[in-house]
Length: 238
Ligand SMILES: [Zn+2]
Image 1 (spheres, rainbow, N blue to C red):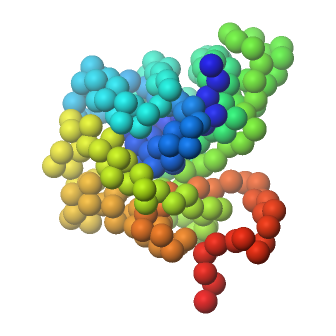
Image 2: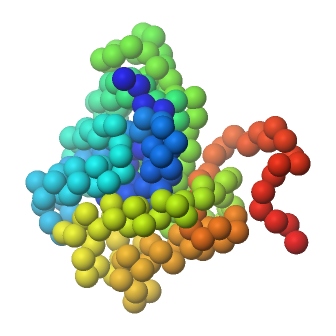
């Protein structure tokens, strides 16, 4: 069965940090959601691939995702090459999502940057009827980039209110005890002296404040957002 929303990221736990609230919110609304982790995280400093597999499974249950799959690509060696694109095209065709969430194209970890680019390319190629990969042709309607933890000089195109989902997002993140217990930084999150869990809360509170809610997750799209009814628009101007 196709999913409505698919989040793709390089490592197990990336999706939890960047867009778990949005996945939960979609699931709460009755949509089918999926996660595609590109690597098994075997090159990470903490934990091991097998431990991270168990943690990812528990987190997926908390997030209520319909399916979580792992592309089995080599951690810390991701590249946008033909073999990688073919693997991703087959996975995207299998999930057949309407909307895809990708990492932001700029990042500290090379895998995060490459995951963004190769996944976008694969989303396009997956729709080519004659592209040589498994599955029926399918091109996602929409690509969203997570802007979480980024400090690039651009505003989010929109922020998703995850106030009602925030505690479950933290529960999913806490599944990765091997990665985060005692951690003061992770991936794209720079240290301030706070625990990792407090860092996530601070960032999500800041993003929520942009739309006058308690917690939020920011996204960027290259396309312009269409508004049907300007009278119904939220977020107070003054
Ligand atoms: Zn990562």
